[in-house]
Image (cartoon, rainbow, N blue to C red):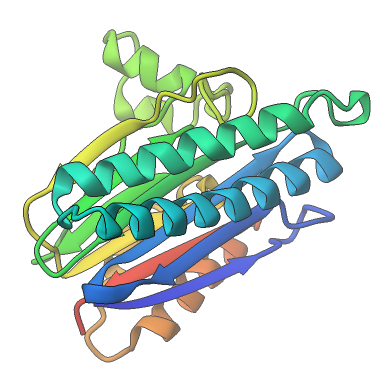
Length: 249
């Protein structure tokens, strides 16, 4: 697969508190992740930056040590690598939160380990992972959010959640508690497209419009991530927007 990433400040925020990671390793193994910081301009930027850097360092270390010890690139091993990285990032951000000027800092994360045969993913918060192909789009990750809880218990519908006044209230993030306890997901196949994004995209652009942009056979992946960000900005650009697209081109 080929990987394309793009992050934009949007039209209303003074700083970009999102960060993203695309790191390709040996044997066709790639790890990509999106972090959406919170806790004010300074806190959000610090949280996402610390988490992104720590996450990458942990993945690189765990992968190298595991392969040296004879580990195979199985789904179980890949999941362990991602979860270990999430815990390391959580601890690093949590340690930084002791600074009184950074009270409330934290960050979401959605991350995927992609190989030629399978995908393993994790998430903490409401940044999302989608698979796209054959004219359809499916959300793989599940938001750790208050409105998702309301949907789960049947109090509101998925459609009502889109405009709920508390839709940005998340129930879990990196940096506010230990351990991190990320949710995990496995795919025993590789879809046509894999999309990771912050809520700056999904709060502004419908899944149908995301599908239409990504499915355009006349544009390459680099153009598609730009078009997704442009669509969010055209809808108001209320938040930072970050997109990673893995494409089987």
